[in-house]
Every structure is written in structure tokens, then in C-alpha cells.
Length: 79
Image: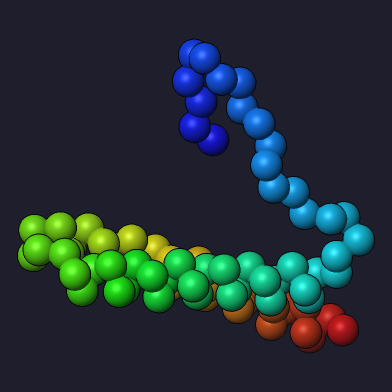
């Protein structure tokens, strides 16, 4: 969380505790996938020297998606 000396951190977002695991995983997947799509689009519009960094971020996002998918698979097997 970003803070500076003038502002204390403020919690703007929260997750309702009654939301089920499946819904949380589905929303996490969609959020991460959306970030990946935006990063990919952004990378296409960057000069070569910055494109590599954006594509590295895209790879990290894809790894996050794989982790969420693995958790979803485990939840599905247990249910």
C-alpha cells in the first residue's frame, strides 16, 4: 500500500466474509486475466526498450492465473 508522510493508509476495498470460495476464485481469475489483457495491450504500444518489461509483467500475471487455476481444481475435486 502506498503511503506518504501526510496521509495514513486508508482501506478502500474489502471482501465480504460471506462470499464463497468458488466465487472468490472466479473473481480473482477474472481480475488477473483482465490485468493480463491490459498489460498485453499496453505492451503492444510501447517502444522496444520498455516492451520487454511489460511482457515480463505479463508473464508474472500468467503465472498468477496458473496458481488460481490450480487452487480452483483442488476446490472442485474436494466438492
